[in-house]
Image 1 (cartoon, rainbow, N blue to C red):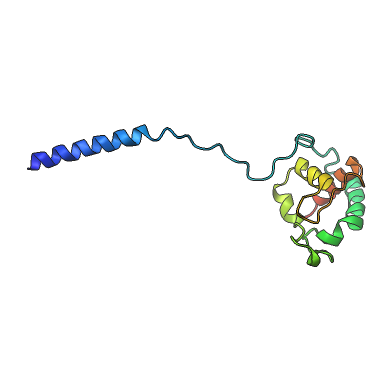
Image 2: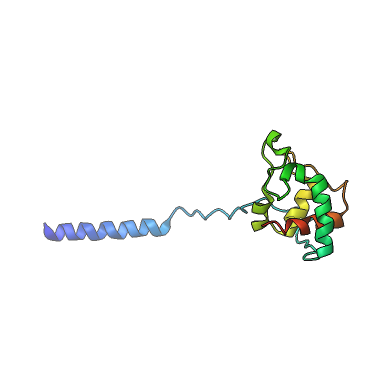
Amino acid sequence: MKKSFVYSFIMLAIMATLIAACGGGETAAPAVPEGPVVPAEYAGKTNSFAGSSEAIAEGKQVFESTCAACHGDTGLGDGPAAAALTPQPASLVEVNKTAADDYLLWRISDGKEGTAMVSWKTSFSEDQIWQVISYLRTFK
């Protein structure tokens, strides 16, 4: 009886190993990007004004006149118009932690569907948008 039990146990272990090794032939699904994919039109673009104190000053003027009403003076998404908006404006302090230049250029240029973030590419030149991004990068 003991010999029969050992034999059964060994056969069960071998069968379990074979079944596990064969698997279902399934492969893992490809990884999905965590955030939205920046359109090719903007992908890979970088801010040539980065770190320029002149660009930061110009960007601050544009931000204060057009962006602060929603995003707040310090970019926390707490501007005077924010309370009436659903969803609430993004905290640019948080966005700054992970957003690449090309993402910011895209969002400011094209806006964001389903939010109050409108497209600014017909109101401002690309250089002006980069200046705003230079200013946004000062938010901590």
